Image 1: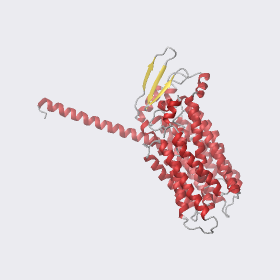
Image 2: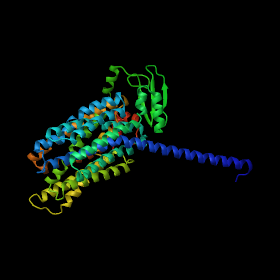
Image 3: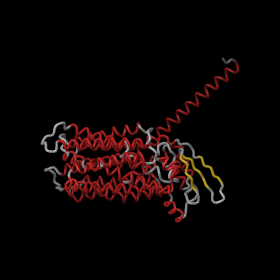
Image 4: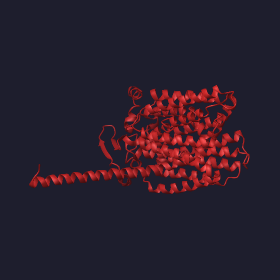
Length: 500
């Protein structure tokens, strides 16, 4: 019990603690609001990408209708679906270089230009050639999504990085649902015009987003980095410099990430020579994660998810799903959103665990589809048609838990800061080219080997992805960039990091 002077001291302490608590709460609220604003504005690009994925399937279904003024065959369909993926690596390499030279935000805006032009071309397309031109230009901007993940990887706290990454995935699913709904009420040219307006507005709104402080410091722009940190309510950079008999070494701690830079790396005040820069690519901290992420993309594309994404209506019809293909596509898009939300809620779960569950769930769902197709292969009107619908929905849901978002996500997490943009672009080029190959040859493979055989291969890859997550994939959840890179330094550490 306090009295007299002690009472006043107690009241002062209580008031001080209360004020500090309010300041902390206000700061946390400001931090959350600014991060959410930046995340949403950056993720709107992935909303447009989600629309473009479903647009392919809806467009092919409309062009194959007898009333369509533009006639296409099977070969034309495969090129319309796969053309954006074929040219995507070109834009991906350009954007990958621009992320290191212009910055993450400006590189994304450059990528937006191709999206804007492509939707405008498609809005007024009246021939197959015009559609191919629009789809080709669209592919250049699809690869700019790497800027979104790089941006969030550098501004979000390490602890909550998976949560912010999952928001990007949710936006892709929202774009798919929006495209499916718009296609029910508007003609595909009108939908293209709507997406043109949306892309233009969002590209302009990105001027509200500051560049990442981490990138600004690597270019020696410390004052701009401080201003960006203040706007984002980030913790100020803690820089420590220790002398060495060989070369000076500096450690920058940003959001829990320790970035070590020596004479071969990039510091806040010094750029490396050309020889030193290219030598960075030969280290185990570069080629090991490159091999792992490439293998991750092999399992992702081998699981067949993007085939279902680009040919959803045709696949559902070939599997003799008795419901309307466009309606089921809308349900699949909704399942993607739900899976994205669940993925966001599971941000505290280990990445390796998510990959095992995701790959296993996809394999089980596809196994059910294959067994059903084989059981009723010779039946004209197979019963229990809802089994196929639910199995496809479960397949999409499990894919969203890890196999769809994580290969793209970890490209922004496992490479050193000095080569992150270039290596992320190179690895994703492989992912997109592999996607193009699978999407392009899918119709021919189905014609040659049959739907059951092709989807059986997808089932095997889905099961293999679960094994990849258990024994090969490195764990990145809750780890700083320095901790992730250190796991590739020695075989002992790498094996320890990969234990399931």
